[in-house]
Amino acid sequence: MCNIRHQPRDVVARRAMPALLDHPPLNLRPVLESTGTPFSIARYGQRGVIFFQGDACDSVLYIEIGRVRLSVGTADGKNAICGLVEAGGFLGEEALDGHDTRPQTATAMTATQVLVVATSQMIHLLHTQHAIADRFLAHVLTRNTRLEGDLAAQLLESCEQRVARALITLAGCRDRPSCVCVLPRRLAGDHRGDGRHHTLAGERLHE
Image (tube, rainbow, N blue to C red; front, side, top):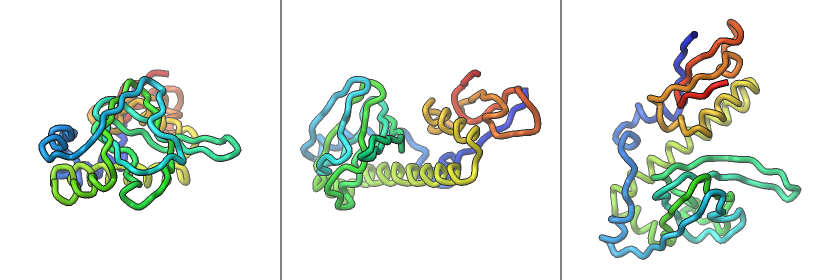
């Protein structure tokens, strides 16, 4: 077996800014309760739609439990996955930028529970609660870095390498750099040989 270590750009970002990115997920509910901020709780089963692309964009959601897939679609029926958000992440943050409608569809991949906070209330919290502001900034930085990496992969990497990147993301490994992922050499992107496995950052995946 030939082992190589793959360092996704989001892992590099965590090391570069440990004060923001290397901390456990924020427990948002006690902060909302202690500040008297109105919020609601919504629960979804696996494959439950949290919001559709085109719905009113009037709140920000915080994932307490579960995992959510973000996707976009076109009028002629084409669909693409554009992101995965774990517990401790936010959904619908476009509301803070003045969007009137949701640009994506959010679907629960597992049993999911979210806290729903009105846009105006979330803006107030970001201005007054440093813990929430730090967690939100970490979420935005991580997502932007990941999107840039995905765009670079789409433009520069082979189809096999993009498949490997997608498998690592779907397995939830990009948020756990200490894990190990075993992939065939052809998916790891090394063309010095054939058939043998390489080790990438992430969960263990087999042929």
